[in-house]
Image (cartoon, rainbow, N blue to C red; front, side, top):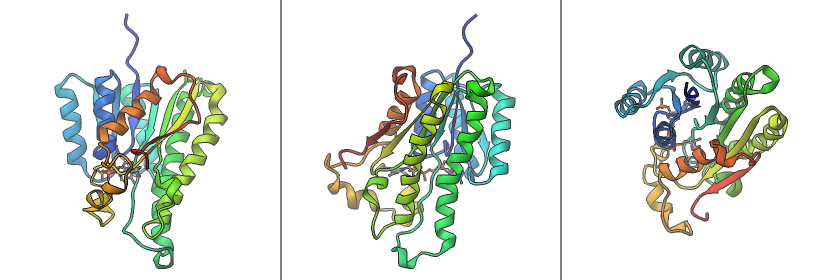
Amino acid sequence: MSAPKKTVLVTGGSRGIGAAIARIASANGWRVAVNYVANAAAAESLVAEIAAIGGDAFAVRGDVGEESDVVAMFAAIDARFGRLDALVNNAGIVTPQARLDGMDAGRILRVMRVNVVGSMLCAREAVRRMSTRHGGSGGAIVNVSSIAATLGSPGEYVDYAASKGAIDSFTVGLAREVAAEGIRVNAVRPGIIDTEIHASGGQPGRVAVLRGTVPMQREGKAEEIARAILWLLSDDASYSTGAILNASGGR
Ligand code: NAP
């Protein structure tokens, strides 16, 4: 009998970097739970695309910043796959450019709730399933940070940059907390990647404007981030935990 296929949850897996992760994970033999929050059509279309080439994926709605949604999402994965081997905390948002002196608490809390609290809640549910302390067989978590964590994003969105700085600290802390329980926790810091996030943050032309500031003189593709993440999820990265990998073209 062949070993059961490993399963991964990709939060925000319906579009952008998350969709690239889901596609490549499936091509590498993973069963994939594709999380989304609003765009069911994009999630279902990706799931159909994966099924058409022989993969096994399903779409699961849930706002990662809502604890009840996160608990329900993991229960849906338990019911569908019966196991969990990996989590990619990819769901994340930016809000329109502003200086700190123009931000209100609602905006800052929204960014922190999705980017930080959401990642921590999803990691909690994954640890409860994967940790040998809880009877699991181990696993891997990759958090999607941003090179903004090192740049601070002054005049653009220091709230977003700070949320990703929190993700970096969380990665190191959780990695050490569960290292002896079979779980590796790492992060990737993308630079400027061509996805719809810039338009949702009110800057549809951001990639073209900033391209020239990247040492490599180009934006990255979602697939270039996805491949770094898939490596960290794989057994090829078996001795890496608490690592934070820049995938930012030198930025
Ligand atoms: P994107 O194209 O805007 O896609 C965002 C994805 O996250 C969508 O699938 C969206 O679902 C989902 N999502 C948003 N809020 C959610 C929530 N509350 N709960 C669950 N899912 C939610 O974004 P992206 O550019 O691929 O970014 C992915 C990650 O990379 C983010 O963490 C981002 O901060 C990070 N990153 C991106 C860049 C870049 O230049 N693109 C650079 C550095 C870091 P729906 O389809 O339902 O809306």
